[in-house]
Length: 203
Image 1 (cartoon, one colour):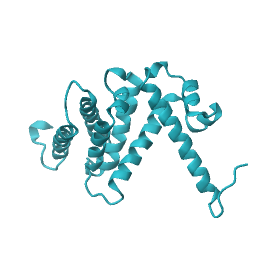
Image 2 (spheres, helix red, strand yellow):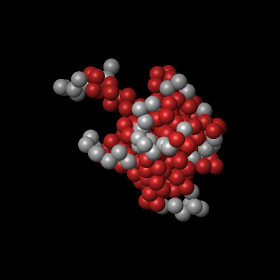
Image 3 (tube, rainbow, N blue to C red):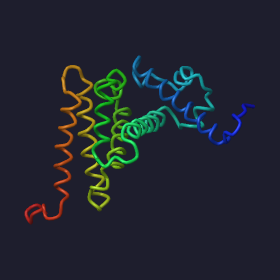
Image 4 (tube, rainbow, N blue to C red):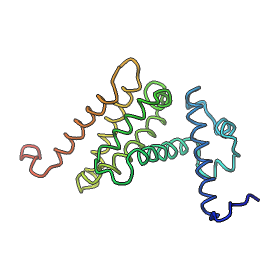
């Protein structure tokens, strides 16, 4: 049985082990997606590359789709947290981190969007971005949950399209320009939610 270092709580050791396992599985999936289509990747391929057992995989994820969504969400949140720290007052700063990430690592993100991404991958990555937007911009949205959800859906698809353009070498959209385009989308959505901006003819 593995022993903890003196003075290290067993729970802390277990947490580190869990993080290492989940990171290994995330990396294995992303590396495989750089080599072949997502549809062809099996759980066996993932666990062999990550060097973990099948039971270990299923202790963390239901299937490869769950791994894709959950691990990408965790990865993005960690990168945003590391870049911004706990006291960032800029609601859109997290979005800027997303643009920086895809610009810095286009080979990693190309399999997650664009022509190489199938419907499952596209929906999962769009959901990742929707959750980030809800967490960081949600406080500025309409108090009506349905209206807020519709705005997040609109913004997340727009964000996905802009990030896809940044990683597409044929479109030549820089991360800075992409971020500015997103700010226009966000400003328009935010302004539309301000009281008094809807006239009688708009109801």
